[in-house]
Length: 317
Picture 1 (cartoon, helix red, strand yellow):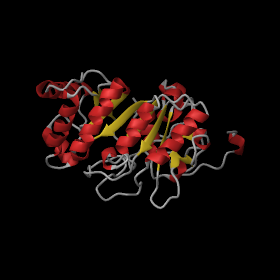
Picture 2: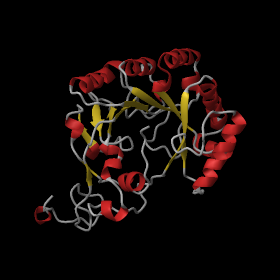
Picture 3: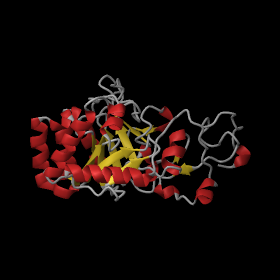
Picture 4: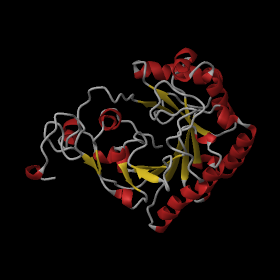
């Protein structure tokens, strides 16, 4: 953008896609390659976490269940246009509440993609029919499938403060079942409690050893610790100069290599978004096809700064 033709700066942060409140050029991220395509299977969840990134709950159906047929249309587009996508991710809500989840999972794997599933490993995943299907899929595709279990904290007390009484025990039961049956697994923890990273990893390491769970808590890929976001917090806007100042490469941002498909309640067809963390912000809806969604993304939200640029967070495997 030529600053001579830029609109006047606003006194409010994150108000304009091209310029910051101070009138500086806002950073944008170009899609380098669609390495990961996420499918949000719906925002319904069996629990309502205190600090859920996208407010999933047993009653939130703002994003409705995506269907197997709708998913396949995007996989067809990847094949037709030779996009070279490596990974398909499934998130929610809780993906295993969606009745099409087993068929979507199997189809994505059968088409040769690596697949990452974000789950709380609780009752929806632990239903006998789902476990039977998962075992068959794991037996057929092995390490092509990774299950990432949300376990906010290594202590039952703090985890249950976030997810409700009994959630820790149920999550451990599901995680142990996955580990015992040879699934490729990792855990997603949270940094809500402002502990030193070493203490968090050591706490999870002790938990995994106690429960005989096959995860190396010292491995950042085995235990993924997500930075927290607060839309009301005062965070800096990211300008084009910030890349050099912070020594951060825009190619490392999530939106440089991924997109997410959602189906909004009442919508005729799914939409493609720039980010897994911003499902309700219309500014980050890029179109209905992957081709339409290949445009650059202005970093025009506090989450862009806090989670991605400053926090180094990424949902992808």
